[in-house]
Image (cartoon, rainbow, N blue to C red; front, top):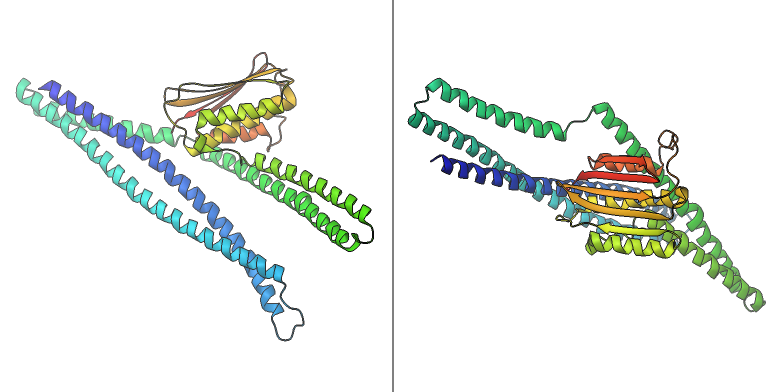
Length: 384
């Protein structure tokens, strides 16, 4: 009879483990939907304010006492903004629906886990009662063992909860401040590039082309030279935009799969840095990284590869991604000059290393950087 109780317990434990894993997967999905909804709401807020500005301008210019008429350009911009707002609202409704569905599903899974946990305790009680009837265990001993079983379950649940929430609040605030500061820095950088380098270049080229229209019949040679200069400027502008897209991880494609995406990344880098030997190794991964981890792996690789190229004077870099004990391990090892003693204290708060530290924090992972005949970086974080 005891083996039957053991079999039931094992089955219950497997089901609890399965539903706990399912809960983690959908909890991560829920957080992803909430993050996307937040981004949509921010964008909607920005566009709504911009639309209000154009609406005010339009209303003013249509006033019967004003000689100024609404320009087609402003009307077109307002129409584009309305179209984008409509699209974002559709996404907003979609994410709100997904969040509601995931929330309901998570509650359902949680109830199943609770029921299974209760069933496990109940089976334990039956086992004890069986022992009592067959081995003459007294009533007080049965109660003691039942309470002991309950306490063991409570301790385990408490331990799991604390392991997920084991972080000092002040430390959490420091990390969140750094993350927000880095985000603000990036937004400021991108908007400055768009305004000073992209928008200004387009404006200058537009003026140049307008002059060409005026002078093409009078001085064709000058017009031809001007057009060539504009073409060169436009090509340079494309390079600037491509650089910003790279910085914003535009090229990351989760649909490729991590192995193919990393292989493509290495191929592109070898083309750009022919004097640097780049070795890429991906182990036997049993689990497919979710989007957050997929994205974070590339962000971390880009950060430390950038350091290798700019500072290490390395001739070889080896990048590897492996899975072990339900964790991913990312490693970047080069044969360069290594790190200065003050490499952590002497870095700006927005530096690549500090960014990597915050990414590791968000993944509840561990970042290790050691000087070992070059620089040896490893980041270990949970699969889920």
